[in-house]
Structures are given as structure tokens and as C-alpha cells.
Image 1: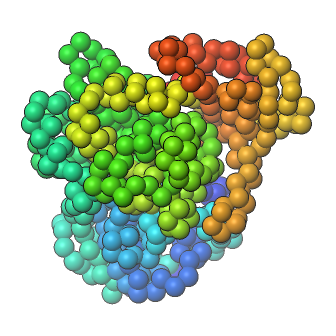
Image 2: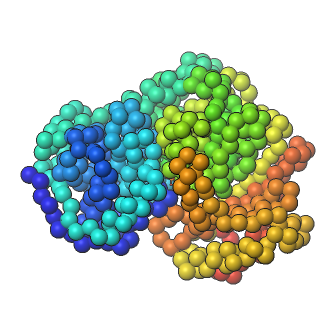
Image 3: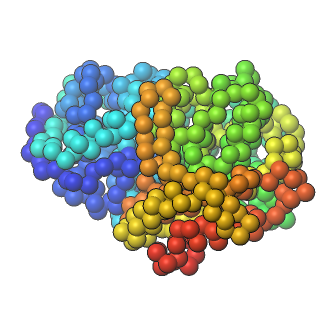
Length: 542
Ligand code: G16
């Protein structure tokens, strides 16, 4: 039976960079998840009888909200839901299912790389029929609806057994519990030269992958070990756990330190990689060398034609504004378009749908392509492996040759987490106020060339997104960018992005923080980071 339940609105359901993310107890407030899901449905049109994909990264509260979402989908008139077995779907796999089966859209439950558990993070986001995160137009409509919602619809049927594959029925709606891995693994096999990678691994090339006790475990086991023949044990932490084993499933040098240490050690494997909570981020480390996400986008773009799925070349490349300009140099050499978007994968959707770009990437450890409409951690790993198999060189050789050919973009991001929100807003307001007076100012050897508050004009739908980050560009191509994260769940996170371009190959082996030292000091001088946040050092440096 379908019930209409009265509710009162919450005022804080504004989706951030990637959906609504809050602590679990916050989501457990009365009707909190129900209100948001109903607000999503109320903001959409034309889904009666259509299919909705539902899945998540397996974190704490995943199963509860999946049951709610299924029952609300039935009550709101969807004809069918496709749910990953066990409630599991990586974000890129969910995107693929939406596209492959022509679903109306999908609900993905994840707080990405944030920790999981009863007092940790949870999240809900809506993806549209192209498989990508809802546009700002839709997320704005969801937020507007959430502020006035007074009822939601839900079936009172029993819970669905999420672990039993097959077709069931719930209040007249079909519920398909599907294998979360199969379709995705098939897609990867169609894009990449699996026989070449398998031969490389059989030849003794050692690969390790850390799934960080998060969603990519089953995917990586199937693809790397079962289909590509990596020895059992190559995929570490492969069981998705509700609390990620107490770890922070963020594949960076801080939270994947064990992997990093192993890759820098004397007996390092040839290739190390990791992915995050929901499987869309990646970390790539070669024997003795970490590849920054910004460099990875550039290097994958420069070599993508070596993989069968990209043999025809790329239509164009897109990167988020704070991502380094390394990819721009590749686009220039290839004679293809390069697009600079605001932070947030949703901004790549229009460019991909219009066929203007093939590869997209972000400094926040996200790379992906037109194969889905999300960034894709394992895809990046497999493209690297395909390139390594064809070029038959080490990661280090590929990286250093790339720098020699294109120049090196030294790059680092400094995060100040859980900063007082008013202090963080004050810092940004102050930067904004300084913008007109910055051009021409000298800071030591650095002279400001331009300074602005980044606004994006979408070349496809001509929508404008303003206030997407303060950028200060110095003569010679160095820059610092400041913005507040849209994915944190407590206080504010200030992100400072620092970049220097170095064309001279004899200066390509400087330690990154050292190469950026003067810019780091100037960033503090201009923004007053220490004085305004009370922090002497960043919480995380990547
Ligand atoms: C999300 C978005 C990315 C963005 C990242 C960081 O990734 O999809 O586009 O770069 O957040 O955003 P922010 O700097 O606002 O925290 P994920 O992996 O968290 O879903």
C-alpha cells in the first residue's frame, strides 16, 4: 500500500559539489532522507513507468536508505528499479548502468572519500539519464523543493532482500537485483587491450591495488585478478566495509601512505594504485614515483590512442579550473579543444554529451572519459596499464619523458580542514575585495599578471556559474587559486592550489614543495591564511 506521510522541511538540504553530504546522525533525523529523496522526485518530470538505478558504496546506513529509496520509487510511480546486489554500485558503475539500460536516472548513496560509520559521513545524489550528476538547474530545484516540502510518498511493503539476485516486485514496481560488477567489467574489456595487459602481467610486471575497504574491491578483484591474471593478493583491502575498516578511503599520499611507502621501497612493485569510497577517484604510483592527478590527466590524454577504445584519438580535453595546465599543453600539441570548467564533475556532462571532449580530469584525483559520465578510478588504472603494456617503459620513464617534451607543471594543493566557517568566508571576501588592486603588484620576484573570481560560461547550454574560485596568475605562468570545498561536512575547508610551470628539463627533479616555496609564502601573504584561520600548516598537502 502507498502511504502519503506528512513531514516538515529542513533548511539545510542544499546539494554541494556532489550531492547532499552530512554526518550519519544528521541523516538519521526524522524524515531527513525521505524529504530529500521526495524533493528529488518532485523536481523531475516524466519518470512514470521508467527505470531508476539505485546503489551505493556500502558505507554505514547504505542499506537503510536503499530500502527507503526503493519504497519511495514505487510510491512515486517508477516502473522499475535496478539495484546493485548488496546495495553495492560504484559511482562509475552506476553511471554505466543508467546509460546502458536507458534508465531515467539514478540515486547514488555515497560520501565519496569521506570516512564511514555510525558517526561519520553519508550522502545522496541524483544522476540524470546521461549517467552524470544532476546539473545545477536540477540541484537548485531540489534544494528549493526541500525547503517547502510537506509530505512524501512511500510504500509500506516489506524490505527487499538485497543479497538475492533476480527480479522481484514491490507494490507493482519491478525490482531487479543485479550483479554490480558484470556490466562494468564488460565495458572495461571493450575499451582496453586486456590480452596485452595480461601478457605484461604474466611477464612479471607487478601490480598492487588498494581498494581501501571500499566499493572497488569486488570490481578490482574481478578485473585485475580474475580477468587480467594478477596474482591473488594483488588487490588489498578488497572487502567493502561499512566503516572502511576505520580508514579514510581517500586515495592520496596521506591516507594511502602504506601503499606509497611500499612503492617507494627497495622491492617496490612496478605499479601501485588505489581508489576511494565510491570508486571514482584514483591514485597512481609507479616504482619510486607518484603521478599527480593533474599530470595523470595530461599523460593519459597524450597516450590514450594506444588503447583500442581511444585509437581514433580524442575530441578534446576538459579539466577543472584548479587543475594544473599540464593537459592544456597536450591539447595544444594534439590540436584539439581544451575546456576549463568549475570544480565538480557535473560541469563536464554537457561537453561530453555534445561530443566536444573525450577525456576529463581534476586535481582532486578524478579522471574519466566519455565511456560514462562520472570520473572512474579503475578506468584510469586500466588506461595506465594499457599504456604501460604498449610502451613497455616504466611509469617513471613515461613521466620524465612527458615532462621533457611538454615541460613540468609543479603542483600542490594545501587543504585547511574544519576551519571556522565565518573565518573562511572572511578570507575569501577579503581576497575578492583585493582583486582590482592585485594586477601589477610585486611579491619578491613574482608579479601579478591577472586576478579574478572564476566564472564559467557553459559553451553548450550557455548557463553561467559564478564565484568558482579566486585565481591569481603571475607573470611566467605560475598561479595560486583559492576556493572553499563543497564536499566537507563540518566547518569549512579552504583549498589553496599552487602551480609553477617549468619548461627547463634540467630543473625537473626539484622536490615539489621546494619548487613552490615562494608561491606558498605569497599565497599566505595575499590571503592571510595563518592570521585568519589560526592555522600554521595545512591539514593535508597533496
Ligand atoms: C567531488 C566532485 C569533484 C570535485 C571533488 C572535490 O568528488 O565530483 O568534481 O573535484 O568533489 O570538490 P571540493 O573541492 O568542492 O571538495 P567526489 O569524489 O568527492 O565525489
